[in-house]
Length: 332
Image (cartoon, rainbow, N blue to C red; front, side, top):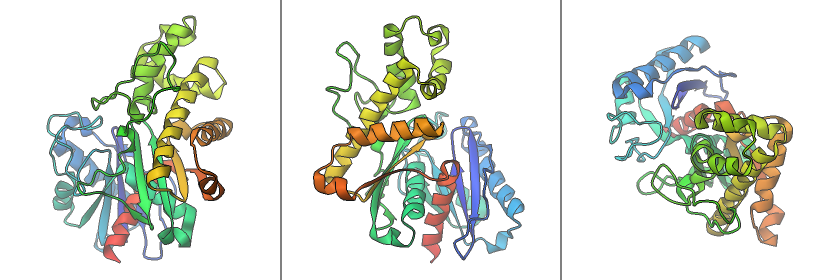
């Protein structure tokens, strides 16, 4: 058996993968992540969700060969949180903290680390291609609070020298024709101006897109709402076809299309996957948004004939399942 743990800014999720390749958890097994309280509390919360999923599935601790762990990035290949910290690890104890090593010491079981975007990308790739996964490549963009991502080549996560490959959110994209003539340049929490995350993320909506579009729609019902709460409500308005919300999501689709266009020219993958909160929506909105991303992805004729565009499946379980797959690869 291997266990997959998906660590997030507010909750942890977990799954168990047996020797036959069957996931023993069909639904979320969420518990609070408590990462805002610092490393000691955060590691204890991961141990708690590990023990919880063993109890739920009737798995004996002695059966577990390895644990897969994913967290939001940026972090090194060995699971050391970036010295600059990150959106989800704002507590001063996290920058430079070895989250993989600390969990391994707490559990006494080998822990395999993946960035959360990489974990979701690995699961999407494996679920989509099945037995052909080892012969295929893909790029995934995971739109949430930030913009995560993952690059898979021949069925394996591309991790990079420092473990920070696949940080697609911090790739700079062309902004000409994406922004309105009077629209300010979008700024990212990482300090970059004009990277993909500054547009295609919930944070991008809150900091950059919504404040501008409210000046164009001053009578919109969100104009009187605190900006953080208003940003969280934009997707619901988009599902209803609200003109302002659709303008915002059209800009996000353009940003993602330009990001995938860059990927097409350095990687030429078999598939492009889209996941995250932006597609945890009504089916008609998901289909509209994916079609807009596809329209804004500029492929050569030869690429367009063979490339696939798809949503990340089993979205709320993708991170934990991808982490479990990475752990299984380490013991087989």
